[in-house]
Length: 291
Image (cartoon, rainbow, N blue to C red; front, side):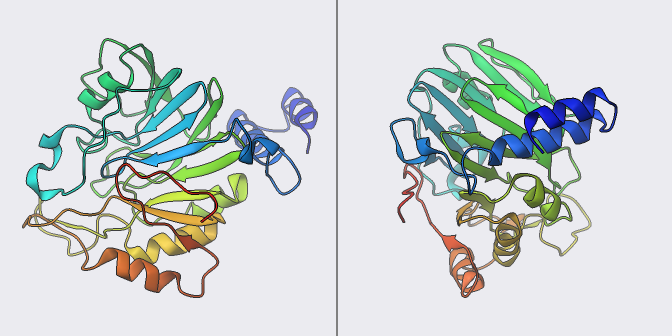
């Protein structure tokens, strides 16, 4: 269905607002070129992506920067997290920040203030407003499946499930001829197929892999509160992701937060024979699309 077809159907009442937005967002994402690719994917306007600390990423275009879950405050994890904290106060062009949820390791007000020091939008799940909001940020709630236009970026919040039951989303972002998925610290859930149908395939999926068990709330569940490496590979496969970049791992020495043993080794093993490549990035590294 073309964009004109979307307009005709919504004007005729054939689609509800949510289904209209979801369907047209999916069309916008794939109607770049045959195969869902754009000439810009390998040209001067190509999207570059840098992994930040923990679950954070920076998406860079020549005149715009988009951050997802940036983290620079060492107090979030203290000595338990070995990641190098990457500065985010050097955004190029127009800057925006997306957060998946309001836990302190995903919404860092210090990082947001630095990323948006010259102003910009802070997007968050519609039912979870982050606090405190830096003075430079324009707070924008985002409803599930509703595409958000951010200059050269289009970002759509899609379903996720939080280990504590708090509101959380994942983000689908299209820009520079690429389409990426960022999973925050979601659990496994049943919406992977719907997301894949609406927006896949993806050039890259940034997915949590540490399968951590929590002891902060009692009684202990004994169940992982974050996707395991095997679940991350399954999700990436369903999403049609060409590559899986692991995030949200590397915490050690905490009695109340215990990761699975050797998450990267388990990730590589789970991906053996599957149609998804694993690309491990250290904080500060950039995605090599040729890899």
